[in-house]
Image (tube, rainbow, N blue to C red; front, side):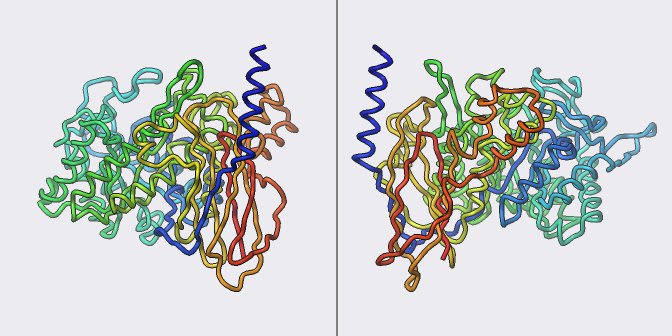
Length: 553
Protein backbone atom coordinates (compact mmCIF):
# COMPACT_ATOMS: atom_id res chain seq x y z
CA UNK A 1 0.00 0.00 0.00
CA UNK A 2 2.81 2.38 0.94
CA UNK A 3 4.65 1.58 -2.33
CA UNK A 4 1.47 2.32 -4.30
CA UNK A 5 1.07 5.65 -2.50
CA UNK A 6 4.64 6.63 -3.34
CA UNK A 7 4.09 5.68 -6.98
CA UNK A 8 0.94 7.79 -7.12
CA UNK A 9 2.76 10.77 -5.58
CA UNK A 10 5.62 10.45 -8.10
CA UNK A 11 3.15 10.15 -10.97
CA UNK A 12 1.30 13.24 -9.79
CA UNK A 13 4.56 15.16 -9.48
CA UNK A 14 5.60 14.15 -13.00
CA UNK A 15 2.22 15.20 -14.37
CA UNK A 16 2.48 18.57 -12.59
CA UNK A 17 5.98 19.05 -14.01
CA UNK A 18 4.69 18.34 -17.51
CA UNK A 19 1.84 20.81 -17.06
CA UNK A 20 4.07 23.51 -15.56
CA UNK A 21 7.41 23.40 -17.36
CA UNK A 22 10.35 25.37 -16.02
CA UNK A 23 10.96 28.39 -18.22
CA UNK A 24 14.60 29.30 -18.79
CA UNK A 25 15.39 32.40 -20.84
CA UNK A 26 18.85 33.08 -22.22
CA UNK A 27 19.57 36.49 -23.74
CA UNK A 28 22.70 36.28 -25.87
CA UNK A 29 22.58 40.06 -26.37
CA UNK A 30 23.07 40.78 -22.64
CA UNK A 31 26.69 40.11 -21.66
CA UNK A 32 27.42 39.73 -17.95
CA UNK A 33 31.21 39.68 -18.09
CA UNK A 34 34.01 37.51 -19.40
CA UNK A 35 33.77 33.73 -19.14
CA UNK A 36 37.06 32.82 -17.51
CA UNK A 37 38.09 29.14 -17.49
CA UNK A 38 37.95 28.79 -13.71
CA UNK A 39 37.21 25.07 -14.24
CA UNK A 40 40.57 24.18 -15.81
CA UNK A 41 42.53 23.72 -12.56
CA UNK A 42 43.08 20.44 -10.68
CA UNK A 43 45.17 19.17 -7.80
CA UNK A 44 46.00 16.26 -5.53
CA UNK A 45 48.03 15.24 -2.47
CA UNK A 46 50.04 12.46 -4.09
CA UNK A 47 52.32 14.20 -6.60
CA UNK A 48 54.03 10.88 -7.43
CA UNK A 49 50.76 9.61 -8.95
CA UNK A 50 51.57 11.93 -11.85
CA UNK A 51 54.15 9.45 -13.13
CA UNK A 52 52.03 6.30 -12.94
CA UNK A 53 50.13 4.74 -15.83
CA UNK A 54 46.66 5.92 -14.87
CA UNK A 55 48.00 9.24 -13.66
CA UNK A 56 49.71 9.92 -16.98
CA UNK A 57 46.55 8.93 -18.84
CA UNK A 58 44.41 11.26 -16.74
CA UNK A 59 46.81 14.19 -17.12
CA UNK A 60 46.48 13.83 -20.89
CA UNK A 61 42.68 13.72 -20.61
CA UNK A 62 42.72 16.86 -18.49
CA UNK A 63 44.77 18.62 -21.15
CA UNK A 64 42.35 17.46 -23.83
CA UNK A 65 39.14 18.59 -22.09
CA UNK A 66 39.83 22.27 -22.58
CA UNK A 67 40.95 24.66 -25.34
CA UNK A 68 42.79 26.73 -22.72
CA UNK A 69 45.76 25.81 -20.48
CA UNK A 70 45.04 23.32 -17.70
CA UNK A 71 46.93 23.85 -14.43
CA UNK A 72 47.97 21.17 -11.95
CA UNK A 73 48.75 21.75 -8.27
CA UNK A 74 50.22 18.97 -6.12
CA UNK A 75 51.45 18.59 -2.56
CA UNK A 76 54.76 17.15 -1.39
CA UNK A 77 57.05 18.55 -4.08
CA UNK A 78 59.78 19.15 -1.49
CA UNK A 79 59.04 16.34 0.97
CA UNK A 80 61.84 13.87 1.81
CA UNK A 81 61.42 10.21 0.90
CA UNK A 82 61.88 7.54 -1.74
CA UNK A 83 59.23 8.74 -4.20
CA UNK A 84 56.78 5.94 -3.38
CA UNK A 85 53.31 7.44 -2.77
CA UNK A 86 50.63 6.43 -0.32
CA UNK A 87 47.37 8.07 0.69
CA UNK A 88 48.00 11.76 1.44
CA UNK A 89 51.75 11.39 0.97
CA UNK A 90 54.42 11.73 -1.73
CA UNK A 91 58.06 12.75 -1.79
CA UNK A 92 60.90 13.93 -4.00
CA UNK A 93 63.95 13.89 -1.70
CA UNK A 94 65.17 17.04 -3.39
CA UNK A 95 67.12 18.27 -0.33
CA UNK A 96 69.45 16.58 2.15
CA UNK A 97 72.50 17.54 4.20
CA UNK A 98 75.73 15.60 3.80
CA UNK A 99 77.97 14.43 6.65
CA UNK A 100 79.52 17.88 6.82
CA UNK A 101 76.17 19.65 6.99
CA UNK A 102 76.36 20.89 3.40
CA UNK A 103 73.21 20.93 1.25
CA UNK A 104 72.79 18.28 -1.44
CA UNK A 105 70.16 18.90 -4.14
CA UNK A 106 68.81 15.94 -6.09
CA UNK A 107 66.12 16.63 -8.71
CA UNK A 108 65.82 13.08 -10.07
CA UNK A 109 62.37 12.28 -8.62
CA UNK A 110 60.86 15.74 -9.04
CA UNK A 111 61.99 15.78 -12.69
CA UNK A 112 59.83 12.72 -13.31
CA UNK A 113 56.77 14.58 -12.02
CA UNK A 114 57.37 17.73 -14.05
CA UNK A 115 58.32 15.72 -17.14
CA UNK A 116 54.92 14.00 -16.87
CA UNK A 117 53.25 17.43 -16.75
CA UNK A 118 55.21 18.56 -19.79
CA UNK A 119 54.46 15.41 -21.79
CA UNK A 120 50.73 15.74 -21.07
CA UNK A 121 50.78 19.42 -22.01
CA UNK A 122 49.50 20.70 -18.65
CA UNK A 123 51.04 23.58 -16.72
CA UNK A 124 52.23 23.33 -13.13
CA UNK A 125 51.05 25.42 -10.25
CA UNK A 126 54.18 24.89 -8.19
CA UNK A 127 53.30 24.56 -4.51
CA UNK A 128 56.36 24.89 -2.27
CA UNK A 129 55.74 22.21 0.35
CA UNK A 130 56.55 20.46 2.49
CA UNK A 131 59.65 20.79 4.69
CA UNK A 132 62.55 18.42 3.92
CA UNK A 133 63.59 16.16 6.77
CA UNK A 134 67.07 17.69 7.11
CA UNK A 135 65.64 21.21 7.14
CA UNK A 136 62.67 20.88 9.48
CA UNK A 137 62.65 22.38 12.95
CA UNK A 138 60.03 19.83 14.00
CA UNK A 139 60.72 17.21 16.66
CA UNK A 140 57.83 14.88 15.84
CA UNK A 141 58.17 11.80 13.65
CA UNK A 142 58.80 13.11 10.15
CA UNK A 143 55.99 11.12 8.48
CA UNK A 144 52.67 10.04 9.94
CA UNK A 145 50.88 7.39 7.86
CA UNK A 146 47.20 7.57 6.94
CA UNK A 147 44.73 6.95 8.59
CA UNK A 148 46.74 8.74 11.25
CA UNK A 149 46.71 12.52 11.09
CA UNK A 150 49.24 12.92 8.29
CA UNK A 151 49.63 16.65 8.94
CA UNK A 152 50.98 16.01 12.44
CA UNK A 153 54.49 15.04 11.29
CA UNK A 154 57.61 17.20 11.21
CA UNK A 155 57.22 17.59 7.44
CA UNK A 156 54.76 20.39 8.27
CA UNK A 157 57.06 22.30 10.62
CA UNK A 158 58.92 25.56 9.88
CA UNK A 159 62.52 25.43 8.66
CA UNK A 160 65.33 25.51 11.18
CA UNK A 161 67.12 27.96 8.87
CA UNK A 162 65.10 30.41 6.76
CA UNK A 163 68.08 31.38 4.64
CA UNK A 164 68.62 27.72 3.78
CA UNK A 165 64.89 27.46 2.98
CA UNK A 166 65.20 30.42 0.63
CA UNK A 167 68.23 28.86 -1.04
CA UNK A 168 66.33 25.58 -1.52
CA UNK A 169 63.48 27.45 -3.24
CA UNK A 170 66.00 29.39 -5.36
CA UNK A 171 67.81 26.22 -6.45
CA UNK A 172 64.53 24.43 -7.15
CA UNK A 173 63.23 27.33 -9.23
CA UNK A 174 66.54 27.70 -11.02
CA UNK A 175 66.52 24.02 -11.95
CA UNK A 176 62.95 24.16 -13.29
CA UNK A 177 63.72 27.29 -15.34
CA UNK A 178 66.83 25.67 -16.79
CA UNK A 179 65.01 22.42 -17.60
CA UNK A 180 61.78 23.83 -19.03
CA UNK A 181 62.78 27.34 -20.14
CA UNK A 182 61.96 30.89 -19.05
CA UNK A 183 59.12 31.25 -21.51
CA UNK A 184 57.27 28.21 -20.16
CA UNK A 185 57.96 28.76 -16.46
CA UNK A 186 56.84 32.39 -16.72
CA UNK A 187 53.32 31.09 -17.41
CA UNK A 188 53.32 28.89 -14.27
CA UNK A 189 51.95 29.89 -10.87
CA UNK A 190 54.17 29.60 -7.77
CA UNK A 191 52.38 29.19 -4.43
CA UNK A 192 53.93 29.06 -0.96
CA UNK A 193 52.77 26.15 1.22
CA UNK A 194 49.28 24.82 1.89
CA UNK A 195 46.73 25.80 4.54
CA UNK A 196 49.15 27.43 7.00
CA UNK A 197 46.25 28.49 9.23
CA UNK A 198 45.70 24.87 10.38
CA UNK A 199 48.03 22.00 11.24
CA UNK A 200 49.56 21.83 7.79
CA UNK A 201 51.79 24.46 9.40
CA UNK A 202 53.23 23.96 12.87
CA UNK A 203 54.37 27.53 13.26
CA UNK A 204 52.84 30.91 13.97
CA UNK A 205 51.27 33.16 11.34
CA UNK A 206 54.34 35.40 11.59
CA UNK A 207 56.59 32.44 10.86
CA UNK A 208 54.50 31.70 7.78
CA UNK A 209 54.88 35.30 6.60
CA UNK A 210 58.63 34.84 6.92
CA UNK A 211 58.47 31.55 5.01
CA UNK A 212 56.50 33.32 2.28
CA UNK A 213 58.90 36.28 2.12
CA UNK A 214 61.96 34.10 1.67
CA UNK A 215 60.26 31.85 -0.89
CA UNK A 216 58.88 34.56 -3.19
CA UNK A 217 62.11 36.56 -3.00
CA UNK A 218 64.00 33.45 -4.11
CA UNK A 219 61.63 32.76 -7.01
CA UNK A 220 61.76 36.37 -8.22
CA UNK A 221 65.55 36.34 -8.01
CA UNK A 222 65.65 33.58 -10.61
CA UNK A 223 62.53 34.50 -12.60
CA UNK A 224 61.62 38.18 -12.10
CA UNK A 225 58.30 37.87 -13.95
CA UNK A 226 57.22 34.74 -12.07
CA UNK A 227 53.59 34.73 -10.86
CA UNK A 228 53.87 34.21 -7.08
CA UNK A 229 51.26 34.17 -4.34
CA UNK A 230 49.49 32.63 -1.39
CA UNK A 231 48.57 32.01 1.38
CA UNK A 232 46.49 28.95 0.32
CA UNK A 233 44.65 29.21 3.64
CA UNK A 234 41.40 27.43 4.47
CA UNK A 235 37.99 28.86 3.63
CA UNK A 236 37.56 32.10 5.56
CA UNK A 237 34.06 31.36 6.80
CA UNK A 238 35.58 30.74 10.24
CA UNK A 239 36.84 33.66 12.32
CA UNK A 240 40.33 32.17 12.57
CA UNK A 241 40.69 31.56 8.83
CA UNK A 242 39.29 35.00 7.99
CA UNK A 243 41.76 36.68 10.35
CA UNK A 244 44.65 34.71 8.84
CA UNK A 245 43.83 35.77 5.27
CA UNK A 246 43.22 39.38 6.31
CA UNK A 247 46.47 39.61 8.29
CA UNK A 248 48.44 38.02 5.46
CA UNK A 249 47.15 40.67 3.06
CA UNK A 250 48.08 43.38 5.58
CA UNK A 251 51.56 41.92 5.78
CA UNK A 252 52.02 41.95 2.01
CA UNK A 253 50.50 45.41 1.64
CA UNK A 254 52.24 47.19 4.52
CA UNK A 255 55.39 45.36 5.62
CA UNK A 256 58.82 44.91 4.10
CA UNK A 257 60.12 41.46 3.21
CA UNK A 258 61.98 39.59 5.93
CA UNK A 259 64.21 38.24 3.17
CA UNK A 260 65.44 41.48 1.57
CA UNK A 261 63.59 44.43 3.16
CA UNK A 262 61.84 45.12 -0.18
CA UNK A 263 58.18 45.30 -1.18
CA UNK A 264 56.56 41.87 -0.79
CA UNK A 265 55.35 40.43 -4.12
CA UNK A 266 51.77 39.13 -4.27
CA UNK A 267 50.66 38.36 -7.83
CA UNK A 268 47.66 36.22 -6.82
CA UNK A 269 45.68 35.46 -3.67
CA UNK A 270 44.65 31.90 -2.83
CA UNK A 271 42.38 30.25 -0.28
CA UNK A 272 40.24 27.10 -0.01
CA UNK A 273 36.42 27.19 0.28
CA UNK A 274 34.84 23.81 0.97
CA UNK A 275 31.35 22.38 1.33
CA UNK A 276 30.18 20.07 4.08
CA UNK A 277 28.10 17.00 3.16
CA UNK A 278 26.39 15.04 5.92
CA UNK A 279 24.21 11.95 6.23
CA UNK A 280 20.62 12.81 7.16
CA UNK A 281 18.03 10.06 7.68
CA UNK A 282 20.19 7.62 5.75
CA UNK A 283 20.91 9.80 2.69
CA UNK A 284 23.60 12.28 1.71
CA UNK A 285 22.86 15.98 2.08
CA UNK A 286 25.38 18.24 0.36
CA UNK A 287 26.60 21.56 1.79
CA UNK A 288 26.83 23.92 -1.19
CA UNK A 289 26.05 26.90 1.05
CA UNK A 290 29.19 26.25 3.09
CA UNK A 291 31.46 26.43 0.06
CA UNK A 292 29.78 29.53 -1.33
CA UNK A 293 29.74 31.36 2.01
CA UNK A 294 33.45 30.66 2.46
CA UNK A 295 34.20 31.96 -1.04
CA UNK A 296 32.09 35.06 -0.51
CA UNK A 297 33.74 35.79 2.84
CA UNK A 298 37.14 35.56 1.16
CA UNK A 299 36.10 37.86 -1.68
CA UNK A 300 34.81 40.36 0.88
CA UNK A 301 38.20 40.39 2.65
CA UNK A 302 40.10 40.90 -0.61
CA UNK A 303 37.71 43.70 -1.62
CA UNK A 304 38.76 45.69 1.46
CA UNK A 305 42.17 46.31 -0.13
CA UNK A 306 42.18 48.71 -3.11
CA UNK A 307 45.69 47.48 -3.88
CA UNK A 308 44.41 43.93 -4.42
CA UNK A 309 40.90 44.44 -5.82
CA UNK A 310 42.05 43.40 -9.32
CA UNK A 311 44.60 40.81 -8.15
CA UNK A 312 43.72 37.33 -9.46
CA UNK A 313 42.04 35.08 -6.89
CA UNK A 314 42.79 31.38 -7.11
CA UNK A 315 40.57 29.08 -5.06
CA UNK A 316 43.40 26.56 -5.03
CA UNK A 317 41.08 23.96 -3.50
CA UNK A 318 37.32 24.40 -4.06
CA UNK A 319 35.38 21.23 -3.29
CA UNK A 320 32.23 19.74 -1.73
CA UNK A 321 34.31 18.75 1.35
CA UNK A 322 37.85 18.46 2.63
CA UNK A 323 39.40 15.00 2.31
CA UNK A 324 39.88 13.50 -1.16
CA UNK A 325 41.67 10.44 0.29
CA UNK A 326 38.82 9.59 2.70
CA UNK A 327 36.73 7.05 0.80
CA UNK A 328 33.02 6.44 1.20
CA UNK A 329 34.02 3.37 3.23
CA UNK A 330 35.52 5.78 5.77
CA UNK A 331 32.96 8.61 5.45
CA UNK A 332 29.53 7.45 4.16
CA UNK A 333 28.70 11.09 3.37
CA UNK A 334 31.20 10.82 0.52
CA UNK A 335 28.88 8.53 -1.45
CA UNK A 336 28.03 11.50 -3.68
CA UNK A 337 31.39 11.16 -5.45
CA UNK A 338 30.59 8.34 -7.88
CA UNK A 339 27.32 9.44 -9.44
CA UNK A 340 25.69 12.43 -11.18
CA UNK A 341 25.22 14.49 -7.97
CA UNK A 342 28.87 15.59 -7.91
CA UNK A 343 28.83 17.12 -11.43
CA UNK A 344 25.47 18.80 -10.80
CA UNK A 345 26.80 20.36 -7.57
CA UNK A 346 29.84 21.54 -9.52
CA UNK A 347 27.74 23.09 -12.29
CA UNK A 348 25.72 25.08 -9.74
CA UNK A 349 28.91 26.14 -7.95
CA UNK A 350 30.45 27.51 -11.15
CA UNK A 351 27.55 29.89 -11.73
CA UNK A 352 27.31 31.04 -8.13
CA UNK A 353 31.06 31.66 -7.82
CA UNK A 354 30.92 33.94 -10.85
CA UNK A 355 27.94 35.72 -9.29
CA UNK A 356 29.85 36.19 -6.02
CA UNK A 357 32.83 37.53 -7.97
CA UNK A 358 30.57 40.09 -9.65
CA UNK A 359 28.97 41.03 -6.33
CA UNK A 360 32.31 41.88 -4.70
CA UNK A 361 33.95 43.15 -7.92
CA UNK A 362 37.01 40.94 -7.50
CA UNK A 363 38.96 38.92 -10.07
CA UNK A 364 38.33 35.18 -9.75
CA UNK A 365 40.40 33.09 -12.16
CA UNK A 366 40.30 29.59 -10.66
CA UNK A 367 38.14 27.13 -8.74
CA UNK A 368 40.69 24.34 -8.52
CA UNK A 369 39.15 20.90 -8.03
CA UNK A 370 41.18 18.86 -5.54
CA UNK A 371 40.50 15.60 -7.29
CA UNK A 372 42.65 13.29 -9.43
CA UNK A 373 42.97 9.50 -9.20
CA UNK A 374 44.16 6.86 -6.72
CA UNK A 375 46.32 3.95 -7.77
CA UNK A 376 45.64 0.33 -6.81
CA UNK A 377 42.29 0.96 -5.13
CA UNK A 378 38.92 -0.70 -5.67
CA UNK A 379 36.72 0.48 -8.51
CA UNK A 380 34.37 3.24 -7.36
CA UNK A 381 35.57 2.99 -3.76
CA UNK A 382 34.32 6.50 -3.15
CA UNK A 383 37.47 8.58 -3.22
CA UNK A 384 37.12 12.14 -4.49
CA UNK A 385 38.58 11.34 -7.88
CA UNK A 386 38.04 12.12 -11.55
CA UNK A 387 38.71 8.54 -12.62
CA UNK A 388 38.93 5.09 -11.05
CA UNK A 389 41.45 2.57 -12.41
CA UNK A 390 41.57 4.43 -15.72
CA UNK A 391 37.77 4.76 -16.04
CA UNK A 392 36.45 8.33 -16.07
CA UNK A 393 33.79 9.13 -13.48
CA UNK A 394 30.73 11.31 -14.21
CA UNK A 395 32.24 14.42 -12.61
CA UNK A 396 34.99 14.63 -15.22
CA UNK A 397 32.32 15.25 -17.84
CA UNK A 398 31.08 18.48 -16.26
CA UNK A 399 34.56 19.91 -16.89
CA UNK A 400 34.37 18.70 -20.48
CA UNK A 401 31.08 20.58 -20.73
CA UNK A 402 32.65 23.71 -19.27
CA UNK A 403 35.43 23.41 -21.86
CA UNK A 404 32.84 23.81 -24.62
CA UNK A 405 31.82 27.22 -23.27
CA UNK A 406 33.62 30.40 -24.35
CA UNK A 407 33.29 34.12 -24.90
CA UNK A 408 31.18 36.19 -22.52
CA UNK A 409 28.77 35.12 -19.83
CA UNK A 410 25.25 36.18 -20.79
CA UNK A 411 22.00 36.77 -18.96
CA UNK A 412 19.90 33.80 -17.87
CA UNK A 413 16.67 33.60 -15.89
CA UNK A 414 14.76 30.57 -14.64
CA UNK A 415 11.35 30.20 -13.06
CA UNK A 416 12.77 27.47 -10.79
CA UNK A 417 16.16 28.84 -9.78
CA UNK A 418 17.06 29.20 -6.12
CA UNK A 419 18.52 32.72 -5.75
CA UNK A 420 22.09 33.05 -4.55
CA UNK A 421 21.12 34.70 -1.26
CA UNK A 422 18.71 31.86 -0.50
CA UNK A 423 21.44 29.29 -1.19
CA UNK A 424 23.84 31.19 1.07
CA UNK A 425 21.24 31.18 3.84
CA UNK A 426 19.65 27.74 3.60
CA UNK A 427 21.41 25.76 0.87
CA UNK A 428 19.22 23.97 -1.68
CA UNK A 429 16.95 22.04 0.65
CA UNK A 430 13.42 23.35 0.12
CA UNK A 431 13.06 23.08 -3.65
CA UNK A 432 15.44 21.99 -6.41
CA UNK A 433 17.63 24.56 -8.10
CA UNK A 434 16.75 24.23 -11.79
CA UNK A 435 18.86 26.89 -13.40
CA UNK A 436 21.25 27.70 -16.22
CA UNK A 437 24.54 29.39 -17.00
CA UNK A 438 25.28 30.55 -20.55
CA UNK A 439 28.02 31.96 -22.76
CA UNK A 440 28.25 33.47 -26.24
CA UNK A 441 31.21 33.67 -28.59
CA UNK A 442 31.36 34.89 -32.19
CA UNK A 443 29.83 31.88 -33.90
CA UNK A 444 28.55 29.80 -31.01
CA UNK A 445 26.72 29.78 -27.71
CA UNK A 446 26.41 27.29 -24.87
CA UNK A 447 23.86 26.78 -22.12
CA UNK A 448 24.67 24.61 -19.09
CA UNK A 449 21.58 23.68 -17.11
CA UNK A 450 20.99 21.49 -14.08
CA UNK A 451 18.38 20.10 -11.71
CA UNK A 452 20.19 20.18 -8.36
CA UNK A 453 19.13 19.47 -4.80
CA UNK A 454 21.33 19.13 -1.71
CA UNK A 455 19.47 15.96 -0.71
CA UNK A 456 20.45 12.89 -2.70
CA UNK A 457 16.99 11.33 -2.88
CA UNK A 458 14.87 9.99 -5.74
CA UNK A 459 12.53 12.65 -7.08
CA UNK A 460 10.55 13.52 -10.16
CA UNK A 461 12.37 15.33 -12.91
CA UNK A 462 11.29 18.51 -14.63
CA UNK A 463 10.21 19.54 -18.09
CA UNK A 464 12.27 22.52 -19.16
CA UNK A 465 11.65 25.05 -21.93
CA UNK A 466 14.81 26.92 -22.93
CA UNK A 467 14.38 30.04 -25.07
CA UNK A 468 17.46 31.72 -26.53
CA UNK A 469 17.11 35.27 -27.81
CA UNK A 470 19.66 37.66 -29.23
CA UNK A 471 20.91 35.31 -31.92
CA UNK A 472 22.77 37.51 -34.44
CA UNK A 473 20.83 38.93 -37.36
CA UNK A 474 21.25 36.92 -40.53
CA UNK A 475 21.51 33.57 -38.71
CA UNK A 476 18.59 31.41 -39.84
CA UNK A 477 19.61 28.00 -38.47
CA UNK A 478 21.77 26.77 -35.61
CA UNK A 479 23.30 23.35 -34.98
CA UNK A 480 22.40 21.96 -31.55
CA UNK A 481 24.66 19.45 -29.80
CA UNK A 482 22.98 18.45 -26.54
CA UNK A 483 25.20 16.68 -24.00
CA UNK A 484 23.88 15.10 -20.81
CA UNK A 485 25.16 13.71 -17.50
CA UNK A 486 22.58 11.75 -15.53
CA UNK A 487 21.92 8.20 -14.33
CA UNK A 488 21.93 6.90 -17.90
CA UNK A 489 24.32 9.19 -19.79
CA UNK A 490 28.03 9.96 -19.41
CA UNK A 491 27.98 7.69 -16.38
CA UNK A 492 30.44 4.83 -15.95
CA UNK A 493 29.17 4.19 -12.41
CA UNK A 494 25.73 3.13 -13.65
CA UNK A 495 27.38 0.93 -16.27
CA UNK A 496 29.61 -0.67 -13.63
CA UNK A 497 26.68 -1.43 -11.33
CA UNK A 498 24.78 -2.95 -14.26
CA UNK A 499 27.72 -5.40 -14.60
CA UNK A 500 27.21 -6.42 -10.94
CA UNK A 501 30.06 -4.15 -9.79
CA UNK A 502 33.07 -6.22 -10.88
CA UNK A 503 36.39 -5.50 -9.17
CA UNK A 504 38.17 -7.44 -11.91
CA UNK A 505 36.30 -6.55 -15.10
CA UNK A 506 36.99 -8.52 -18.24
CA UNK A 507 38.67 -6.70 -21.13
CA UNK A 508 35.26 -6.37 -22.80
CA UNK A 509 33.71 -4.95 -19.63
CA UNK A 510 36.60 -2.57 -19.13
CA UNK A 511 36.25 -1.27 -22.67
CA UNK A 512 32.54 -0.63 -22.07
CA UNK A 513 33.29 1.17 -18.80
CA UNK A 514 35.81 3.44 -20.48
CA UNK A 515 33.29 4.27 -23.21
CA UNK A 516 30.57 4.96 -20.63
CA UNK A 517 32.89 7.43 -18.90
CA UNK A 518 33.00 9.79 -21.87
CA UNK A 519 30.77 12.81 -22.41
CA UNK A 520 27.66 11.61 -24.24
CA UNK A 521 25.19 13.32 -26.54
CA UNK A 522 21.57 13.06 -25.41
CA UNK A 523 20.60 12.62 -29.05
CA UNK A 524 22.09 13.20 -32.49
CA UNK A 525 23.00 16.80 -33.39
CA UNK A 526 20.14 18.63 -35.07
CA UNK A 527 19.60 21.85 -37.00
CA UNK A 528 17.08 24.24 -35.48
CA UNK A 529 15.31 27.09 -37.22
CA UNK A 530 15.81 30.60 -35.87
CA UNK A 531 12.53 32.51 -35.82
CA UNK A 532 12.60 36.24 -35.02
CA UNK A 533 16.07 35.84 -33.54
CA UNK A 534 14.89 33.09 -31.17
CA UNK A 535 15.38 29.37 -30.69
CA UNK A 536 13.26 27.24 -28.36
CA UNK A 537 14.45 23.91 -26.99
CA UNK A 538 12.35 21.60 -24.82
CA UNK A 539 13.93 18.87 -22.74
CA UNK A 540 13.27 16.67 -19.76
CA UNK A 541 15.76 17.18 -16.92
CA UNK A 542 15.92 14.47 -14.24
CA UNK A 543 16.86 15.31 -10.67
CA UNK A 544 20.66 15.60 -10.26
CA UNK A 545 21.16 15.87 -14.03
CA UNK A 546 23.34 18.32 -15.96
CA UNK A 547 22.95 19.31 -19.62
CA UNK A 548 25.10 21.31 -22.02
CA UNK A 549 23.34 22.73 -25.07
CA UNK A 550 26.05 23.78 -27.51
CA UNK A 551 24.85 25.82 -30.50
CA UNK A 552 26.89 26.73 -33.58
CA UNK A 553 26.12 28.96 -36.56
